[in-house]
Every structure is written in structure tokens, then in C-alpha cells.
Length: 176
Image (tube, helix red, strand yellow):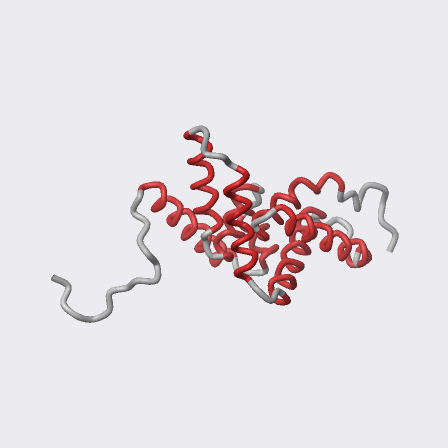
């Protein structure tokens, strides 16, 4: 299968791929590695790219699948979380109020469950339609809409200061 000149131009997609990878990996070095590995896979499998299909969406799907592979093979999620926390603290020094607020919002976003975080990122940051994002994540549109809705509600609760611990639930007993 011969690709037309420019039909497989991934250079124009690098910024979006890096943003998406950053959202998935939660830190710059892992995000760069993720984009690199995904682009190697895309290049190796370029013959599977369907002419007329969206290169951007195809690359997003490869980045996502590469991320899933990385997560499955990782030996310690705790090490990544510790490294991310250290990096986030050093990126935004608390010299100005808006820097502190941005750091808090970023932390709230990274604390979202992965399914909600990746769905919200694709729709809100990458400006994909619900259908495009659902196709990339290989889930029904209704599931995607539910995940985005729950993510937005969680961030709204954070913003309003009404965020409650999700691991505590009242079961049985009197509700006085």
C-alpha cells in the first residue's frame, strides 16, 4: 500500500500526541517515551492505516494502546505516582496565587480515575467529538458521555469545596 505524499505526516500531530500522552502518563519523561513508542508502532504498522481515515484519531488510538501496554507491564504504580508528585511540586512554585490554583486544579485532574481523565482530556482539551473520542477509547458514546460527566462533576465538587472522600460510604444503621 503506497501512501500519498503528506498522507502520513505525523509531524503536525506531535503537539496533540504529547498533550494526550502527558494526560495519560502524568509526567513529561514518561509522556515523551509513550509518544516515541507509539510513533515507532505507527511507523511499523503504517501499512494498516486506511486511506481516507483520520490520521490524528489513528495516532491517538495507538498512543492509548501503547499506554495500556506500559501500565500492564509496569512493576510499581507507586513509584510513578511519587515521581509525578515531586515533579508537579517543582513545576509550579507557589509565588503567585494563580500558580497555586493551577497546581491544585492539575492535581485534581490527575486524581480522577484514568477512564474519566482520558475521556475528559480527549473531549475538553483535544476538542474531539464524543463519537471520535469514543472510537479512540473503543467504548460506546453513552459510556464516554457518562465518564466525561462524572469527571466534570468531580472537578466541580473540587472547585466548590464539596469534594467528599469517595472511599467512605454510609451503609445501614440509623440516618438521624
